[in-house]
Image 1 (tube, rainbow, N blue to C red):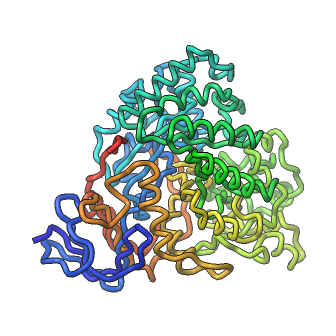
Image 2 (image 1 turned 90 degrees about the vertical axis):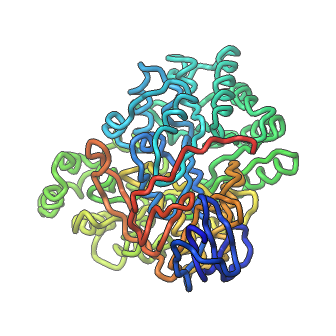
Length: 572
């Protein structure tokens, strides 16, 4: 008798193979049977008319801190994610010396918008080196599995101290020390190393992060830690100041180490064909023997603009700034005062506040044609006719008046502002990326941007939008959308025991009512440590999620089970 039998479901096994009907049996944390008719089970789930898929493997999250205190790891765990990988974008909390704790918290708060008060309260700092950080993570059971990468910025500060913060060039001894630390981290189970070379990442003081201008010699030197290993990937978030030179060193690194090198790729409002040039570079690198890959987003990376979020079009105007100290309900009541409304609308944005925003968020003062009232369920491929600019054109009001009055209607109202991934008024560019085999799906940023972005729901949305509901362009096969976030992500990073419904693989399984799969409008909660604020997004349609054969979620409700563990990379 099997422990669990999921009977008669539509099996989408994660390989891209066409869906078929059959049973899936789970025993001892492993998959015992896929397809056909299984014998009886101690627990049987009638999956007739339901999808049965592997659990999602989300490789771009920022739960580096939350994973040290939270066993549920929501909202990613709500969306069928059974494995998360963090340590992305070069930020994290190890290695670290005692005197640098506050600096790393400040950097994570500034770059990834995780409340500093939450991190200061939640982090226990019972580690110094990266292997010790993994050991600390290993002590706590969770709803889902976790895994980590080594972040460049803490490593650079750990080795170079104040010189790293001042962005001085690394010496040969510095590079050797960083390489050795990365090697030790990889041998302890890290799944890779990440860095960032972008103006979007700044410290709380507005300075660039420690690794922003690291010399190529430093990056290649650190990357040499991968030589001789048959696991681990090197990740980059870059502005590609010199596209040819960036692609050149990534190609060399891939050739020298034989390991994958990946970078984040989106389209940009300031250069509409940049993504094509970079994809051409990826294919060229591959033709030269380097496994260079572009990590892409499945939907536009968009900021939520509201009264109780980090940013809205009026939050950088002086009179509105005075409202930020008020409770949300009082703030809304004051906004509806005609005198104050007129005052705020008459003001120009504060240039000093505007300069503190990342390069693309600065568009909130001009791009009214890229702001869309978010409905329920939310629409992530809206038409320009539904934008604030179009609404204003159909009325006797200016765009900022329309936006102001909409937001003043309540804290549950949001404007969706796609920053990247929406420069052609549709998702055709993302469609092209998703159908290119030199890309990998990522960029959910689960656990990060707590007050402005909530893309932890992307795994659910990939099925809802691309495979089922898209109306403004071609859809994509359901089997491909499952494969892109199961076997593909698992294989790329070396999670060899998961990502497929196959006998002997880890019993991480989703049972989904595909027709009922539906995202809710995001909501603001103050449920992080020290009442830290975050956006979350619920979903309907997940009947069951299993991790290592144990039921963790049933009809969207956490069962309290904690089969999740730290996964350590290895060559197996």
